Amino acid sequence: MATFTGTQVYQNDFQPKTYLDTYYGAVSGVFIKDGYMDFILRKMHLAFTTGGVKGDTMIDIGPGPAIYQELSACEVFNEITAADFTDRNREYLEKWRKSEPGLFDWTPALKFVCNLEGRSGKLAEKEEKLRKTIKRVVKCDVTKSNPLDPLVLPKVDCVLTVGCLECACKDEEAYGKVIRNLSSLLKVGGHIIIGSILGSTIFRCGSAQFSLINLSEGFLRKVLTENGFFVVDAEVLPRDYDKVMFDICNHTSGIFMLARKMKEV
Ligand SMILES: C[S@@+](CC[C@H](N)C(=O)[O-])C[C@H]1O[C@@H](n2cnc3c(N)ncnc32)[C@H](O)[C@@H]1O
Image (cartoon, rainbow, N blue to C red; front, side, top):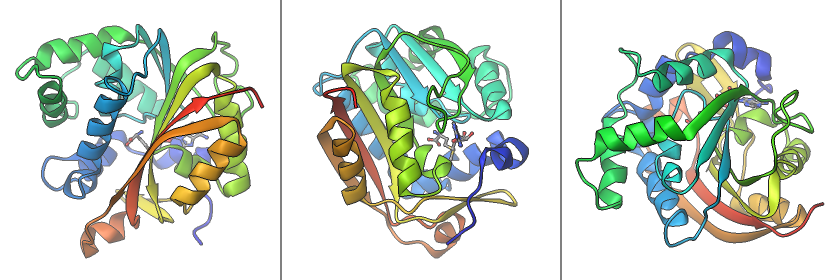
């Protein structure tokens, strides 16, 4: 098992542009080649349309430097708060909000989501909508009982988190605690959406390596149910095996989970 990578290692070694190029780069990105990004975009689109997930406020936990995961949500929420531990990632998001030049190009994701919404070609409008809907980018540590501490926000209608919790937790016990911490941000009746990779222990970003908790669908269902959630949807995307990519990130599949908070625990 890989030694747990704590938040300080993200702070020191996580390079936003290298991460985006490695995982989302057109054609060769790991999550492009294995279909994970399109899978997440399609599932998000369904959740926020026919799935009926909606409301006023949403928090995206651990977006890193990425925005693709919010492209459908910005059509149904008035306010998105983006919350990540790493300073460099929050700075990268702030640059994106200001449309600074030279940043990662999200055109393929924008095209894909606009097509799903039947608005092909409306890429600039979509980007603008998301820029307006992200109201703040704040520091967050999911291991704290209030992950946004010292900020206290009114409870939100949706907590979305893709590719973060498997990085932030050293074991299953810690994962359960993090789910309770995130639940404290959410209204009863609100939704949690988790996008994650399964079966993995490490991922690489440039010369740095980060640990991952080895997750399974069964564990995720159990931890959500035990902590007051009803699992509405869970879909697994098996991964095409590719040795080169497997050395960069050793997951066996991806998962999308949507759950409703039924009670406080
Ligand atoms: C692999 S990146 C995921 C980025 C993005 N969500 C995606 O879908 O590609 C993991 C992110 O988790 C964040 N992170 C790690 N530990 C954290 C913690 N304890 N609290 C909040 N964020 C954390 C890192 O800063 C990093 O941005």
